[in-house]
Image 1: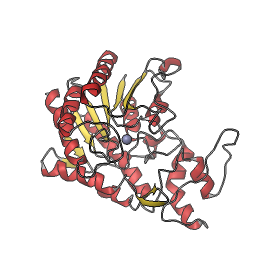
Image 2: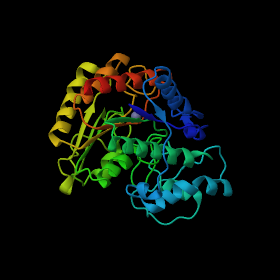
Image 3: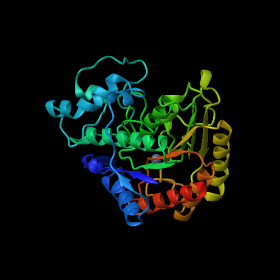
Image 4: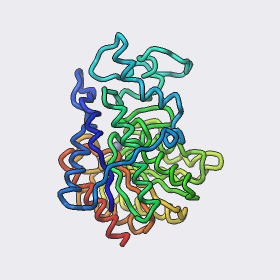
Length: 345
Ligand code: ZN
């Protein structure tokens, strides 16, 4: 399986998360992708190639033009403003009864285009964000050609990003951009299976009214976990998309015995949909050792997860999403991909 990777993600560094009454290094750190790269390289898992470049047109199939402009310019605007701070980050959001007016100051724009405060910007963010989308698109091109599978080692991740909001460490929705590129290349049906610990609210919302892209997500119940405001079981899709979104919210403490039951349901749904292509949004934050989450999947069980999905034997693009155990994210990724590849024969 070819792996698409770039060093550009290192430009998106020095990110800060709230830590009690102060700030600390973000869990979404460069070491994550570096360790995925190192594990894949050291275990000679497959050829590692750089991404190609794609025009804005591919991004604009999913994201709004003004949002894209915001992403490109926000750091420049932040530096030119009176705002201070190592990270450009919103502190004011559009609440009920307020207007989506065209505010001109950078603090306003940050609030206008963010649904939370977890997706900061630094000088190199845009290049990393853009390259991450290019990685997913390059993976899609590989799966469209002669190879059945590819792994897009994306960072920053993408599944929380909506058509015009960043949030949850995500800016461009890499898996959705890739899925759309399959449709644009002639695929009739694409399934996106999201196994990240968190609900892929961005991906769901992007395809919610469509029946050509099936979105399925297994995740911690939003009643008790981020992103709180989407990802419940009673969200079937709308309009012609009714019946084409499926959520499996799961309780804290979910281990493989229970997880695998719902994963098999999800795999059955994908099989019933009979897609031309499968996109897997691979978050490794279901891991028992993840410092930020509450599921109990072990390293060995990531291979079983990959095998359960690989048994579909579909052309498959795997896109890296979350996973915050810096020590184990690489090995867990290798195990997942090995299980996937072996089961698909
Ligand atoms: Zn996650």
